[in-house]
Image 1 (cartoon, rainbow, N blue to C red):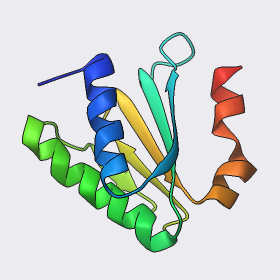
Image 2: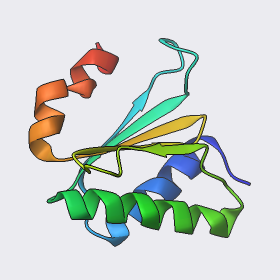
Image 3: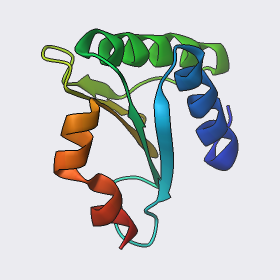
Image 4: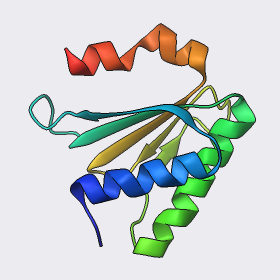
Length: 107
């Protein structure tokens, strides 16, 4: 099993496989105990956010990493994939701009 920056890169590669864009990694270890990293990615449609989450879950099986939870798949504007140490936010650009997680967690 991999962790830290290798896990982050694996996640990024998985998201890029099906065209996620504007991918950002935020180290939140000094700000919260809920995760070590947050990865935020954008998708072009609700359908793509759901596909990205499913693809990520499937590719993580290759490295024996399980997903703790996936939320937001019903509407698909913002899908959260919880891997415990990494939270992956897959969002539509308008949702991402509205919530502006980068400003919240990087400041």
